[in-house]
Image (cartoon, rainbow, N blue to C red; front, side, top):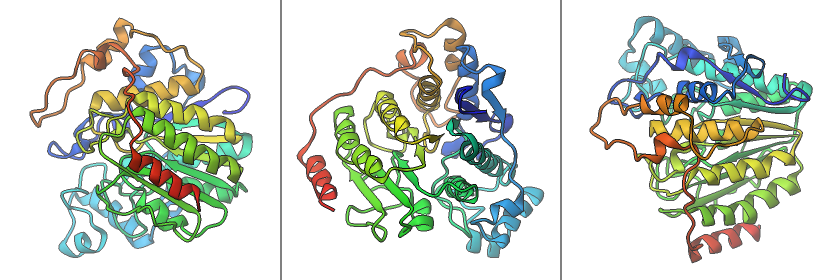
Length: 371
């Protein structure tokens, strides 16, 4: 259990054997890499690991519609959808394809975060669920590679167990449109989203306050570590501290790092680590989720780094041979992308990517500070 005994990691081997298909960005392994790398480093002993349950359909209807949940189950059973289902629920599309685990994989992620919320509500502490973070899902349809919205389900589970004041911080390269849809205007929820400007889903504008409880910060391309630090100290920490949450949910999408193919930000994984370590002391309950991330080396290293820091490990300057073997065995799964640079195999931390804090970043922070 979390609390006095230390943080927990909730994972599953369902991620090892499932893929959205060979032409989809989510063909690459992610959660399985984090588990394998953490074990190779000796950071995932039995007492720290909990197998993720699969959420039952009735539990998913805490936010998703029964018809949509039923459509996901039927798509998994038959391996196909008809035109009406595709149009209504947006499954069977290029972004949200039908694949063999179309229900069971996202239901496992949802089950993991809902279990984490229950455990944290009862005992406090910190839990990492790297299979969580699917922040685009909508009540009745898939959206942006996300079939279910597990951050929303986790936050509703917190509420069901008496935890009311929740701060949700999202540092994915894409705006958390599904989470904002669920909690905009809720005075007991604080939502902060940093994301790349002019990138899908093209929501989360600076002026969008969601009815008062949402702070959206679109950020320019080539965002560097120094700029993210300015965001941390100029927006995230002041707002979360003032809100005094009972629980913090951090969605640590890995697509904001330099090497990710689906975004144009330029962070190192040190930026994510700095955000996590600064937020952790601000609430008695801390839920760390995954999210986006489409470079198999950067995703696996980043979420493993966060787990190592969360669980109090010493981060090595150079990975031992067993850990290097895990990273060396990864591949893109097609697509003709270049092989990884050497440090993506031999180290866990990226080289820092500092730089100037551009005027547009300072200006946007000042505008949000004035609210």
